[in-house]
Each structure stands twice: as structure tokens, then as C-alpha cells.
Amino acid sequence: MTPEERQRTIDFILASLANSAVRMDRIEEIQKRHEEAQKRIEEEQREFDRRMTQLREEHSQQKVTVDALLRVTHDLVQISGNVVDRTKRLEGRSDSVEEMIKVLRELLEASLRRPDNPRQ
Image (cartoon, rainbow, N blue to C red):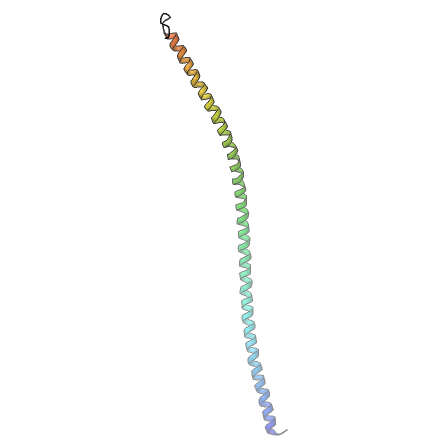
């Protein structure tokens, strides 16, 4: 091999090494960015999981509250039905009491009249 060929071979090897080093630096930089992105994704995933757990707990609490409200509402509907029935009965009694008062008033008026002045 001539000295020129040897020099060209050495230059080629050095250029290849330099290109290889540059590519390795780029690959390491890309790898570093990828690892940072992966860490961010993992952190976001943990935050998402934490938020989902919190939402599930809130949903569970809301479900308990809604169930309790549903039971209370059901009870109130039953009670209001009873109130309607009682109100109708009381109205009936009220009418009966008014009739009794009317009869008693007539009896009182009749007893206050003189026997010689009958009702006309």
C-alpha cells in the first residue's frame, strides 16, 4: 500500500469514526428526550389514575347520597298519601261537626222559644 492510499484509508476511518460519534451523540440525545417524555407520560398517568380514583370515590359518595334521598323521597310520598287520606277524613268529620252544630243551634233556639210561640 502506498503512503497516499494509507493516508486515504486513515482519513476514511477517521471520518467514519467522526460520523459515528456524531450519530451516537444524536442517538443519546434522542434517547434522553425519549426517557424524559416517558417520565412525563408516567407522571401524567399517575395523576390521571389519582384523579380517576378521586372521581370514583366522589361517585360512590354521590350514589350513597342519591340512594338516601330516594329512600326519603319514597317515604315522603307514602306519608303525603296518608296525609291526603287523613285530610279527606278530617274534611268529612268537619262536615259532620258543622251538621251537629247546626242541629244543636236549632235545638237551642227551639228551647229558648216560648212554648206558646212555636216555630213557624
